[in-house]
Image 1: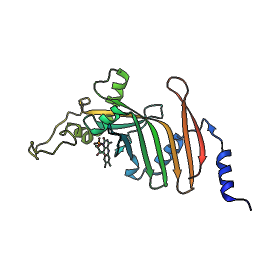
Image 2: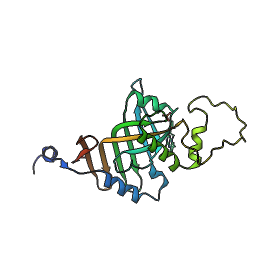
Image 3: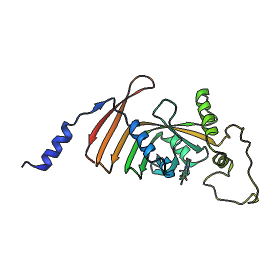
Image 4: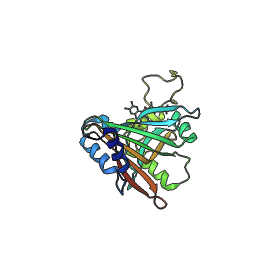
Length: 214
Ligand SMILES: Cc1cc2nc3c(=O)[nH]c(=O)nc-3n(C[C@H](O)[C@H](O)[C@H](O)COP(=O)(O)O)c2cc1C
């Protein structure tokens, strides 16, 4: 019987990257098998503040940007995360699927699309995201500025009204999270895969995967 520690390290050293592998089919499968659980659409998004400290919060998965691996998130332009992303565009997403016991950790960069964006295509995406969200969720963007002390200036019975055909309000902002590394852990099978990417043309990535020790 050989030294088990030696055997272990040899296995890691000899395992090679598999080209063209992608994490997206795995994620789509997890979304499908956990679809009956409302909370499977929630994940944590971490950013880094100007003081170097991390901030983490729960957000809703708003789908992929059409035909890409980029993850969409709706947020309030006035929220603290915006200043953090402007300071440092790197972020991390952590997503756990309770039914299938799978965790996905995405490292990537975040693009902010707000009303001031000069790219017409991006503005169209923001508008599409606005109309794709419920009226109740749109109303949140008309609420007083997040994180400021709550002052009761309105009659609590007073209703904020919003015309359903009205386009995005200034506070509405679309975040595009573009992953460049994915760490997948399956607690059931005790498997862990690391997906890394390298640029392959102007807006394309080449993904590679490697099985690593959990
Ligand atoms: C279940 C759940 C879903 C949430 N979804 C979002 C979301 O999609 N977008 C968002 O900006 N905040 C969402 N929030 C609120 C954030 O967690 C956070 O409190 C807020 O965005 C302010 O964060 P910040 O001050 O770090 O910017 C959600 C909170 C919970 C509990």
